[in-house]
Image (cartoon, rainbow, N blue to C red; front, side):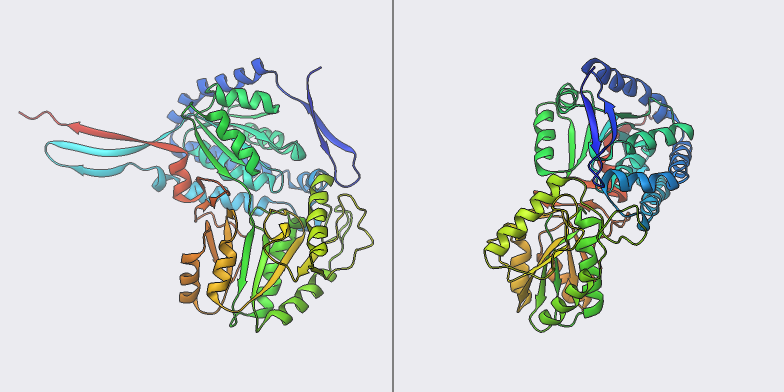
Length: 460
């Protein structure tokens, strides 16, 4: 019996699912078969690849009634929110719609002597390592455009959401995507490292922790395999004096607390102009006090457990350290808080950047709120972070927001919204959030390589 991966349900600590990992030999065989299948897949007409991928997406949607409670069991998101198919379908549909233009040859020039153009060529075998927090949407960000572009895909999902890749592969195969073109695998860290170091893949896309991204880059070192990463975040919100206060509070607190704060682009720090600060905090506390912490399978639960006790332990440690250093916690411990995965959402004030809760990624239902007096002060605080994924700005002045956004070190600037991935825009980051870009036309560029043609015509 080999190594077994176990998904521990945050609902009750039971083993919800377990799968045996592939041996090193079996894993390399999967990669080799994906490589062998890639040429024929890329040779199919683009329209046919698009049709098959979208049929696979629809097949996942047909499973949604089973997927929603399954996600609650695996990672704790309440069933009332209905799963991820809306975003899953939106992202795949957009990438399908822009495929022809995004992958079209780039004409450079033609005359009686030369024809010159650049083609977009699939990398070959793309390895997707997907996270547990939005397991379907994060996976489809790369799976759909990679397949559409003519790559074959090997998907490795997080242990916390062990069944997601299995479901996706089954749906796509049932829709007609050949099995060797899209494979789901269960792998140990050691075999994953060996595959990357052994040039089994032509491109690696990883979403997860900074440490995980560093491990991917170390494994790929010297292979010249491209690695795209989306790693940690400590995303700020900045509420200016002319903001719509109610909209800002509603959106930023939802961005901080939805999915128990376990969002790549969740709001983890909020800076509020001094003229609105007291009212903002009062409204924010009222919203969070209205939450119902509990079993995610129950319809009236609005915030479920964190996905794993160790994640909740880290958030509790950050909160405790902040309070010990002078921060004020505004939410009383809820009756359902069990000291384990079920964690009271928290709002902290009197916080500073000396506290871990304002520096380290929390990835949980806690947010610190600070008072600021100017754009310059807010910009300095927003940039005082090792991460850079998104920033949410709140003002009625679009030009002012753009000017502030130009000075913020981040991948995406939001105005009067937060915590949303627009598939028409490149999903990217800077600093320790990683490198690369998903979705949009740039997503296709990252999943292909340029190939130049300089064709001299024979003339008499």
